[in-house]
Length: 449
Image (cartoon, rainbow, N blue to C red; front, side, top):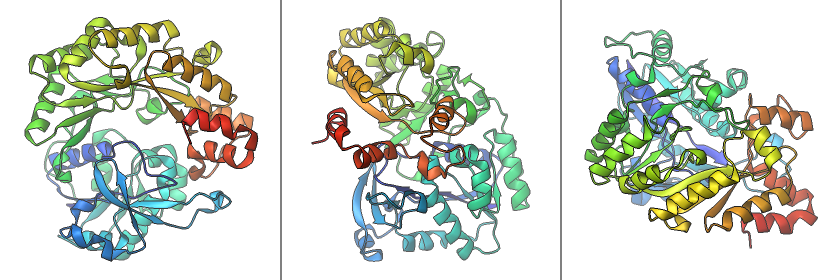
């Protein structure tokens, strides 16, 4: 089959901070490529797909440029959805102009099926926009929706997205069989085994420019942090890839031009003696062939002097950790995965091998049900006392998680709330709009002038 893959626009109050590439969609592309299908890709976040970038602003003069991760993109003010109509903040669509999307979709052979991925649940308006346009361009071609939003909010996606089908699967064979059944044509290559170690590397060549690449060495997470949906997305499974295979994949990416790898694992350092440590030792032996980031943060309790040494020698530039809170009661109810003493030991190990304090970034959580601003300020003060950089992350209620259910019980969100209300920025917006007396503390918390 001729298959068109779409990574849709982001719709939000602000551009996403995380380096944005669709890891899941590129895995799906690899599964389908193994079956012998022909693939084409449109990344709605990347202007460089256009052959005439210098004239791009002529396509949409109401747009303004925004620096979105490693891409050049545009942002355009759009109408706010009804659930957030009362907010004064501008709602925007980030990505390529709509006219360019039409032009790119019409290039090449007509697709037999179109696959649209989805990311964060509250970005779904960009997904819906892409699906609506695709139906206009290819009225007789099935448009299928998958991805994180489709998996976490399946009923909402089926009812409102306009997609001809919603695939809420993550295992290769099931995804491929569903796509082929909907598209009406089977491939002639092998079906990929469902165990993570059998998966081929993501088909990153569809992106063209490969300076930064996200990677996972593990699937899922054995922890059950109350705010996280990792176990939901992976059916409670946790699997690891052989460290030598990971190193081989990194070297292949380097040969294709990658200079920076970001590990998106939820459990990168779990079973470190068997996986992470051998991997970093080998990367160190090879002279740190690429730069490495850990944007999803690493488990503090797993960091040892030996691991710190080989992470440094293996090319890890900036360290992201996650302590969430220093409240003992909340630690116990949240995950109990790290203590303040373990944090101290981890930071000391990292500093001892040559990391600078400002290379260590530590995520704190703000806005959890029942959490006070004072608790977060105390946690921020504790992290800052080590010279590390506190990064305050605002709570986003993710359906199916313990914290989502706690938020429902507290009345801060309804069980069947529109997914746009999952936006973590609404916590901050609501406090600014409705709690004048808290504004000074909020500004202190987020370093807002």
